[in-house]
Amino acid sequence: MKNNIQRTSNQYQVNEKKKNSRNEMMNQKQKQCDKLEQLQDQALIQYYIFEDYQNLINLIYSLQTVNDYFKDDPNNEMVILCRNKVISQLNLSNTIHQDIQETYKDSKYQQFITKEKQKVKEMVSHLPPNVQDSIYLEMYKQNSLSEKIISSYQRLEKMDITPNFDNQVVSQIFSSMQLIDQKVNQIQSQNHYTVPSYNDVIEKAKQYQNLTLQKLEVSIPKGQLPQSQKSVQKKELQGVQQIVRSQSCENLSSKFQQQIQTQNQQSKQQSNENHQKEKQINHLKGLVNLGNY
Image (cartoon, rainbow, N blue to C red):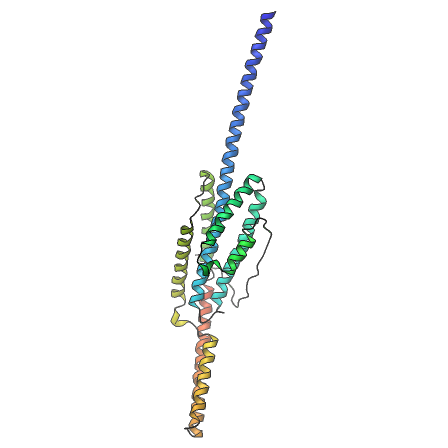
């Protein structure tokens, strides 16, 4: 009887050990899965945060080039277009960070997100003063890098042209989407994302800036740029002053002739300006995605 009880007890202990061992193995596997999932999520968080920041810096650098290219015509449609690109990226950035906040609510993720945002803030603090002091970066820090993200939509500026999305533009958009999918799949398979350094971001932004300048020079050569309204008014004023000065030394007939000649020159100048502006708008319709491609 005692032997039977002992054997039963031993068998029970063996079964319990096996059961505990299986449970331990399952727990270890679950921990490994949880760890891999966390690494994957963290890599995706880094990807969304730093790729978004890179895109914004690219567009700000590009806008600087466009501003300089049209420095005599600050209200040029191309300048407005590029400002709208930056604003659109700010709106997208706000949405991305809001989604990250809502998707990864667990405290372990919130701490990680805060740490990664701090890295971006550190990068921003080392930007050149003319970039760092940009109103767009202030909006970015407030609407995307703060602890609590709330929805914030910035209105685009009105433009006199309507963007045309031809087959080439649509093809480029789909190619970009496919590239993003490939990057996300790669991150998910490797559970890793390489965070860019400050120099990496600046190097890409300058490459983007150079590409913008190249496209501008090809599409709208400086010799074809329309004169700004201020420049036209200045020349008109110079023409009037010349007429006034000539009154003391020319007879009435010659004064009328000079006035007529000046008016003809101004009319011709205005006609040329209108022609160049119309030509530029046609160029703009094909350059809607200048900042993105």
